[in-house]
Image (cartoon, rainbow, N blue to C red):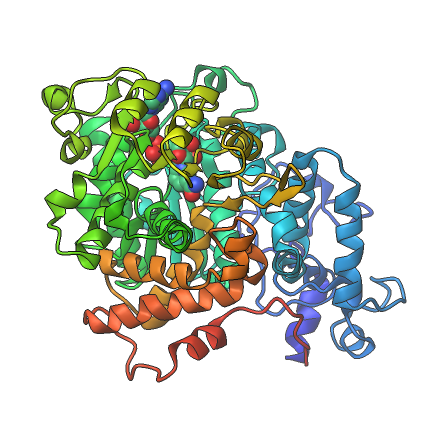
Length: 591
Ligand code: NAD
């Protein structure tokens, strides 16, 4: 060990193993580099035990000023740090003070990303301890802006980029990743990033952000998380003409070529990591999302967060709302603006839950649910031209082009926005919904904030405070006639971290819809009378780790019931087991 450590202290790059190199024969400059060999080929090398400068520069192990005297002595850190010792709590306080000084959310985002690259545990400590303050920074809405500007702010790769150039070599690319034991992969092809459209390769911010939440909110170890962006080109002209764009400068490939690349990726994932790595599809455009899900849900441990994760979180909010409105799900009439991944995914899970709660068949349950897309109400007379995933929702009705007309005709008790188009719940629409409901449920789910169908203030004001409201991106509390309403955030961030933990800890080999229903019920069970009294249909994010443990336990329970779990024997107390599996960002002591 001693000789290994000394070798490390000499620093990488000094030892040259490449026979073609002439290191040693040239002139040494003051940095110990051989200036005469600048243009020559050398072999990069590294070692496994970090100490000295390499320890300080390793984000997994770096503790900055929190290294103790003994650690500084043992690990060759003397002189590399100022003499003071700072606890992790003090470091966290300092960084939060610094972050709060920034005005622009994107600056805060970059400060957080820099921190993650310097000191991973401190990054997660901040995120865990200040989740409500930092979630809008590392996640929606700021992550949307970060993706739009990703080329300009790009510093270091935070995930794997698999482009068309890697066709035929994807297995090798996976082997290049520095961690070997991967449990969760979030993958996007960047075609529908939030409600911002095609951001191509710059969509990488989304898998990176989602996986940060897997760790902070769900306790999955950061080293077990792999963000992946598949770059098949982009149709975004602005990006194609942007000199700082980091992706392939070509139009998207489609059809067989696209599906072959995805197939190679999915096969390589299974080959490299086995049967039990969870693959979360994220922000794919719907023309691919449904097909990929249908194809891989039976062969891989895979789910689509936009379709299934969103569905679970919305169902949980609706089930919690029933405690305020009374009645059952089947007593409600649902109208969606937006009939894509989120809209049809939520609709299907609501229908499934209705069949569980009542004697209704799936067909009967679906009749309570109506969708409006960019061409108007989805009705039988449009059947021929409808995309496959909309067809189950085409009911017998006269067509309506405008949302307002559809609202007046259908008279929904629940209005849900999943269109990705902001400001579409106009005053007239919301007044119409509230005219025939004492407590209208209004969910404006589109992200980021700019695409929200309405603001919290609009929803409360236009319903005179009667709305049960939640939104995809966060809004501040609203005070109306002396009463303060706290809008809930209906975001899949409530579900996927705990869901993933449950899948991973039970060693599940497939995702089943019943597991999503279990996750939704577990989340709804965390909503108390006190939350509902404040207008919240979701528990606050500050207790998310406890919530995630409950969701994980419910998901794992279902996986065992369905015979999909492989971790045996089944732990007796799955909530306690989930908590014991969770990554803690507290620093560890080094021998
Ligand atoms: P999608 O592209 O699959 O679906 C969008 C749907 O909206 C399509 O049916 C389209 O026809 C319809 N649409 C588009 N313009 C419209 C208009 N002007 N009027 C009526 N309908 C219109 O996208 P998606 O994956 O369903 O996502 C939609 C939005 O939902 C995005 O903004 C996304 O960020 C948001 N979302 C939120 C969450 C959450 O957790 N809150 C989760 C997933 C998606």
